[in-house]
Image (tube, rainbow, N blue to C red; front, top):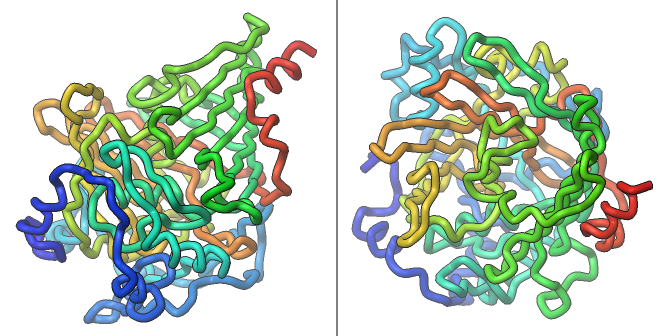
Length: 450
């Protein structure tokens, strides 16, 4: 076991057992959210050598400089890397690197590197969210084997997690604005180093658990709903997809798709799990979008522990770059990707009994301050590393929150990549919330036939 893991093997083994319905922690332990832990559950203190500083409240005020909608794009613009990691010095930093990061360094030794900058703990959330998290710590419960939750609202459900599935719920229920809109491009990186535009889209996302008036009693359990429309290429323009996700496993995902050629809306039950993502020309699976996207029930989730790692973080500058500048042939352009040293939760996903998945084993690395997925490694049926994902989060002080949309999925065996929801050159806005009828198949059908 990794020498930096905090949980012992015995504790990890215990936590990987049956997922039983229970409240996360008692009142005494929850009180740590006001002392030694941040309000979202990270360790407030820095590490021993100071390379991870103490959390001091994060970024909550507007930042100067250029913006792309509500995203400031010049955050820490004058900083220089503290050090670089490349194929030649990889052994020196082995303990801080995921398998996938090491594989990319070895596969592309002439072009891929990590520019490691000073660590900034920018994570923040509105006070209302902090208040909700403090309540969630003692009231939120797992049910249905851990694949559903109940009793919580408006913030991290398990800020002091005891099981891997709780960490994953923290990610799914991550801090968001109630309503956002943006445009994005999906780019496929081919094995010869060329890039292809899969689609360009406009999207509206809504997060009902963060409505101002939401309560555990009034909330339907739907934690994310989105609707997007394809703008390019011309032969796909006008296609739409609507998804509504719920914390209730019995109603985990509802999806509808509108195809221009058919001029009708149809249910889309396959838009989930390991179905190839048609929005990205099939270059990734649907549940690889944004690191992980959808229901948890195909896997058993084992909490391995917590460790210090080098992860992409505070990547506002990457989003501010022109798309051609942000991309190298086989990966993101290292000149524009910011890596920092942070503590991450490590969760291992193995296919559950009686289930199937094209990627039977994954390892997720989730930032302690934001509960955002940072890295994912995927292994094939023989246990060989097959896929790796990098997620590049960014700070939005106007919420305040650290968000993530873009995820880059590498197929290491095929030598391809899929850049999912690239925001470069587009716009991103926090907007007033819409009527929830906007996120229905009926609404798409009504607009599609006009």
